[in-house]
Image (tube, rainbow, N blue to C red; front, side, top):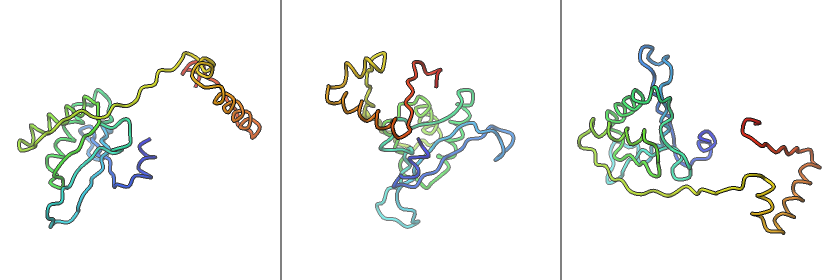
Amino acid sequence: WLRAWAEVSPYPWKVLVARQEGNGRDGAVAGLLPVSPRGSHAVYRLDQVREIHTMGDPAADYRGVICDSQCEKAAIDAFSAHLAGDNWWDRIVLKDVLDDRVALLIDVLAAAEPALQIAQGNGQMCPLLGLPDSWEAYVKGCLTPPSRKSLKKRLRIAEERGCHVRMLRDCRDA
């Protein structure tokens, strides 16, 4: 989903890459932090805030650090060191991120940059939709009669045009 968002995002983006020690730029990837730097790129600026957002803000349900749990600490340390040494930004905006690794990133960054001010608040909730156990139960119990009729018609048209609908009973069938 990140690649799809990057193609339509109105903001610039980049991915911070933390690598395992030993091989420099050729080392194995320890973690990824997709970000979106926003604001003025001019050296001389008056009252213009430069921010780093997590990539996908404000539309994505998941934003945060992508890494193997075995490399988590090394990746967080690398991201924090990079961000603490980068004077391009004035503010890091981590809205609606429910990721313990981001909390760790904030803690490590705050320790590396004592002047950092952190403001936290409640974010938006991602909707959770409870679904019945089967497709048939969903169609029968959740759709109105006109919606069921429309669905049946659209599925028939799709099959007439060569589309094949396959119901999977278990994610292992995928």
